[in-house]
Length: 234
Image (cartoon, rainbow, N blue to C red; front, side, top):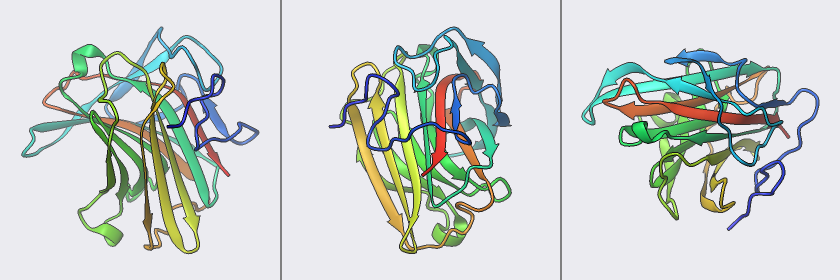
């Protein structure tokens, strides 16, 4: 298992912050895609990836669609940047409040998203497992979850976790890596990767859009906290 570093929360997907890269302590400059997210609370992980500011951002979802599972509610924020390249990294801390835990479905952390098609690639974190998530109907049709791996321990409420995701174009393929870690213990709970030969020309391009999101079932009042987002190209 990988250990999180005491400073900077670096794992096997890691990078240094420099000019033109993003390190956002409270995600205040992000745009809402779904739901609402104007609220911030005085709460952050004990170990922070960016400069400590004592606050985290709270998102609440909006109704999207009814399914066999129930009514699906989604919250999502995005950040458009001039960062581009064949290797895109994103990592963020998150916490599920106790009152929202039962209805929590999953969190998404995406280093790459196309704002027109909503194609995206990155991480999907559930209570007991993680996936690589790639949404691209031309490549995969209705399938969007790949390379499932169980968590070594299930998520619990009111605990800070960190998700690392990397999307890389290499030798004509697209490789996506995902890591989930418990910030307090410093232990990696799961890691996975998936390689596709589909081109996915929307990855990279002239600019990158990072995205964070959460899905809940049958609970319009569900909440999620995000903090300390980092994004870069290496």
